[in-house]
Length: 275
Ligand code: KIV
Image 1 (cartoon, rainbow, N blue to C red):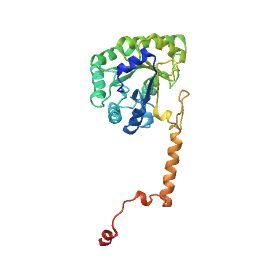
Image 2: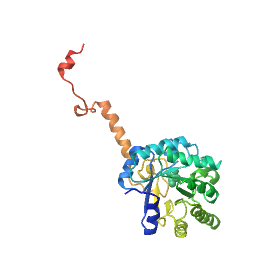
Image 3: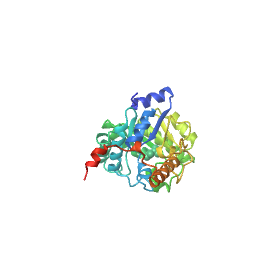
Image 4: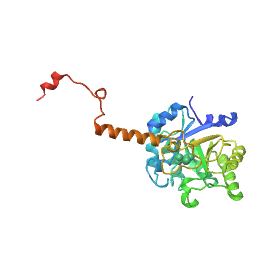
């Protein structure tokens, strides 16, 4: 079944949990889509897990379009969300709408995601006016890494928690169709989820959200450097991949690979004719 923003709205009404993962390439997007996910976020987290940057700030519109296009070729049913990278929606409003439009026209995304709360309502209104659905993202917004002084849980005191709740209401009012809640206390996420009529998608925000999202490399156990507390590893792909690479190296060096069954034949007669 094709997922659209209506699927997201209906799921909230019916109390059905929404599932999302990030993906950045054709092969993995196809696998996730075939597994039956509701939505795929081509997140600017690709800056860290694909491109090896320390944070998401260097990611460009060109990076996002390149990866969103690749993902779209592998997807039949999932809703594709293209992430607006740092500084692509912070200047002139026309440039913001054009950048959102590029993720749809060139990247083949179905909608875009913007990090930030009430301060970005004008941008969300302008993008939705262009018939581009917008997913909001509040709590720990990684593009505000420098302003936050690192990757930290947000909304732990009354003032900060109230601000996030107010932001969620403002995003709904501005026309966002869903909101990512990242790294906020579970009870706050639950309160926000009850306070708004659009679905909340949690990452490090507890069970009370309308859906969940994880970064693919984290949930596959591919990151050996650091695993955030909120990540459950559903596989040990990092260890399995490294084991496969090691065996490949050994087999090539020892001559165990390739075998006859991996090789192509030619008639002896033909070979013998060669001078
Ligand atoms: O870029 C990303 O992957 C994200 C998720 C963490 C929600 O924004």
